[in-house]
Image (cartoon, rainbow, N blue to C red; front, side, top):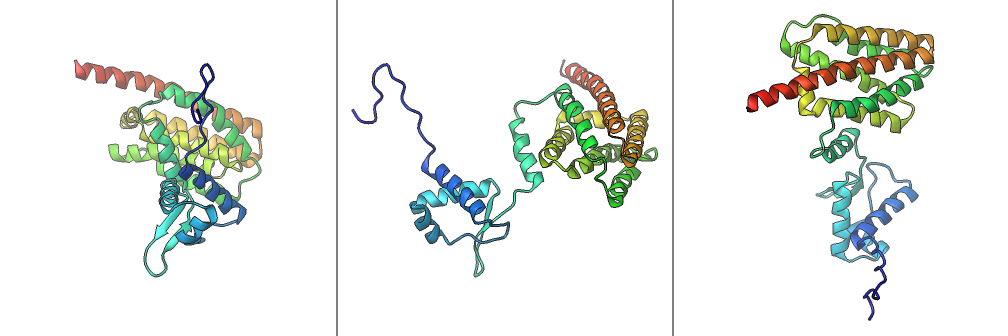
Length: 258
């Protein structure tokens, strides 16, 4: 009988549903046409004819592309369907949702940071302009002095992450830069990390500032090995501190629940 697998034989895998297949075809067509963010797509009727799809299938495909952040629709006289660029923040939010029910530990995050961030920093040797150094140093000025309030200390902790985010944004390797930025974003958003950042710790600011000052000096000197070593030591020290604090936070949480 047609469409029924023979006894003892596995049914062949099904291909993607038509709307999903249309999505991929439209993506390929956008690349082939070298369209850029802001460029218009053909009107719906023309897309239906081009991709030989029904109106319902095409609309479902376009909704999927819009949810992915790859197209946007506008209404009105100048409305239509336009190519869109998925910005980094939105991409990280979508990826972060994957970990919503699979919360990584501090060790999970820093095990990867210890591998990636030294290589990220080393990749910047010889590539930074004076304005890049100024950007890094301006970020450090946020926490180059003792905080006067708890709120200021929290902002300083976030600025310390901003320093690493600047390095990630300057990366010549977009994949490496994105992955480092994503790990930093996880630290900002994990509930346990937010509790850790709320805890006063003057020595932590001074330690981070010391590592980063030495890192910039090594970058200016063009010393790749020193850059890599300094960043690795920085990540390792942060890992030890954050993991110890994580254990304390979880212990406090358990005591409160009892």
